Image 1 (cartoon, rainbow, N blue to C red):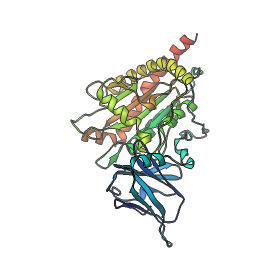
Image 2: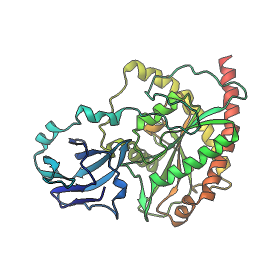
Image 3: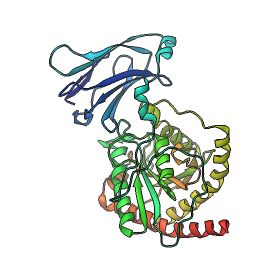
Image 4: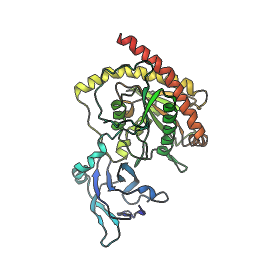
Length: 384
């Protein structure tokens, strides 16, 4: 893309050549979404267009391979008056907005069927050469085969956010960029050991829905799922790494607020929230989740003990619990790792350092080595 501008009533996107597009509205919260095929919005310079009029925020980025997405968060209901290329040879796409009332907005809101691919699980992102892609449909818990002695453990590393969803942003740094760099370092160290087969939920700046991230872990038969994130605060000066495991009740108010923010990633990217599972599936999930949560807490303890020496843990309560949607694989121990705070200068310096990335990767390797064998032995005893 060459330019993207907004004047409070019209969004104008100038690109090299005319490309297919679609525009629609979504409710709860009120948003206008513009998708365009084959256009790289990363080429837009500066901070991008500023919100104006009834548009409270503008976000854009790669949404799924081959498609980019622009999301306008609305302060008041707006309708799409028109969306079309300007007359003439120039490839200038213009989206015009106009006022409407809440009832009319809600009645018209919803994505067209062709836009629903965004809610479908994506393909596995490969790390190891020759690994075949797998589907990622979220499934009820199964009786998983226990890994044989000496067999590599399958681990999924989940770099949070991506594409149209940047995550936390501060001082020119974005959460989505930091976590993909750390994820690549972790994947490299684990794979190089020969003891792990590693999958990434995303290997580039692409948006992946939360449920699809969990689906990658289930489809690949993962024994551990680690979701990498970066925190920030507007008050105080928090610093250090913290680790979260799944719980219906949050361990503290800060953990509850963070879980609520992370769980809305799909909404921020312009997706409707997905429906609930069937009653039978919920019962199966609840039974499996209890054992899995205990295994997750054990992994958290081993990882905290290892990272406490070199990775600079947060001072108070480094292990916290909350209801993160991305940790809800019912049969896979899962943790969310907050690598630090973008609001803290020392943390920012650490999180962009390749040397620190390797420290984190080595600590995760050592923790998985220790926990993996103990967990495997315990599962064998239970199975017998």
